[in-house]
Image (cartoon, rainbow, N blue to C red; front, side, top):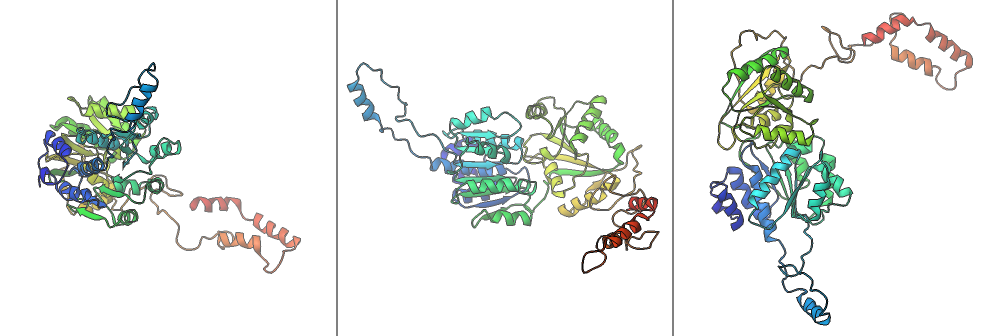
Length: 492
């Protein structure tokens, strides 16, 4: 379907035409008419299919239609009369459109899980609404709130925010949400599933009950859908591709390699592979920094982006990555959601994610806007279970790369569903972890430890224990061999 057939107002059709958009993607073709009609909506589509335009364009269209008209005649007679009564007083400067309008109120609210995604949505609002008078602002944590508060005081029609900073400014009295007409949750599953739920419930109570609510995400598990249905009224469900389906143009493969050999394998592949922008995903922030240091020692330019970096450092890393000579960008899953960076040719899963849906988001950073991409993963012995989960979710078998000389895997293969954690509580190498089977017995008495302790405290049912018996009980407890008790404790 062409954008000309979607029913968008002329300013928005002109904006997308200038951007070179002619044919709408499937999610846009199905979602935009329903949103323009005022329906609540749950949109689910694979990453890189244009979900941001699917909600920003119709939201801006509806807000333009509901913008109150300026009254150009109000207060003009009073100003003329004032001039007659006080001829020596300088005439007050009037607004060229007539009366001074009331301050703008927030009528559209978009919630995003990360700062980078919020900034990207704000950029889309600027592009699509440049032929209108609508104003938007972006607020997120990690930076000074002073410029954000200044933008809010000038008046905002659409606010893009991360939940934490939004509630901070609400509590300070800088943000008022009682006039919100359209509420949007972008990457809804991530926000609802990763600790944002309490904040989202507070925000949901601050906006009017009579509103339009939109939820968009690449994945929408059933438990998250049930929570979403509490906030949506008879929502239209739009799902244009199967949940967690990767882009068809991504070539996927996996290397079986020991964990300690991953840095050298990554270096060799980056040196030998003809590539453009390359994005490497690490499971941890500390791991991302270690990878960057290793690559720089090997003569490769690299930069890291993760939650411990300041917002300025994150912005600079992204700008360098989008430049003409991009470094290898090493990131945690903060960059796996929503970021639209063009011409990313290679994705490297240095560590397999523990949540299989995250794999889909990671590789979705490539093959965007009809391009092709390559994604290869490193799989250590204790990550085989994670690989099986990913294949089961996507219903595909990922191609196994031939083993390279010098990188033959030697680690024992674990088919569990999660990685083994080192230094478990009371665990011993080579032995079984967890609680031992059967009752735990002391060598000196042959009785279970816990019942004997309780018995010493509460023996003699039916009344208080005489002092002599208490002393005898204390003596009996003290006669237990302390060394054997210590050995028993370490065994647990």
